[in-house]
Image 1 (cartoon, rainbow, N blue to C red):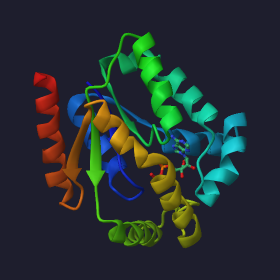
Image 2: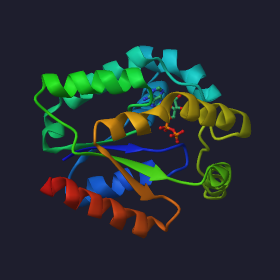
Image 3: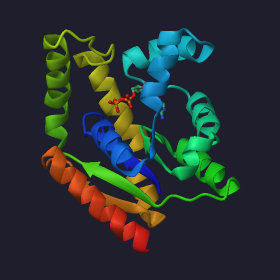
Length: 197
Ligand code: ADP
């Protein structure tokens, strides 16, 4: 089962991707996590990505497509994967399509986690506050200024993918305003449908 989770920052993609990965033994591929690891490791990619990520902008298509192309080839991805945070642009979506075709793979579903725009800012601010209270490190891009840029990047670059995957007949939408367990149940229902198709 190969899936994409689509939705704005704060929609809950990471949370749902992890639940799905645990439940179904799929590999979670989060470009955000991979890039943060590269920044931490101080690799060439990390050096290129750090300032852009901090500002909330998008890292170049070339970099993220390269990361995903390498990762999807790894043997553990053969059992299926969940893309969380990729693709984020039409160019990335086209590249993913070509990549999967060349490997004889396909997408089973693209799940859009739909949330009201007005709650995104408060969700991310709460996440930052909770992380601080727990003594953790708040993400460098979880601040008001970077958040504005992240939302803008989503609406300008990523939201057209909803129409793109609809046209490919891959899009399934779930209500991301529901409690976490309900969102999971909706996604499970989508997967059952996709498995039958
Ligand atoms: P969010 O919670 O905003 O969805 P992520 O953890 O998915 O955050 O990504 C954090 C940052 O990493 C993004 O704001 C962007 O700078 C970079 N990034 C992650 N995935 C991609 C991608 N597919 N294309 C370009 N930049 C990306």
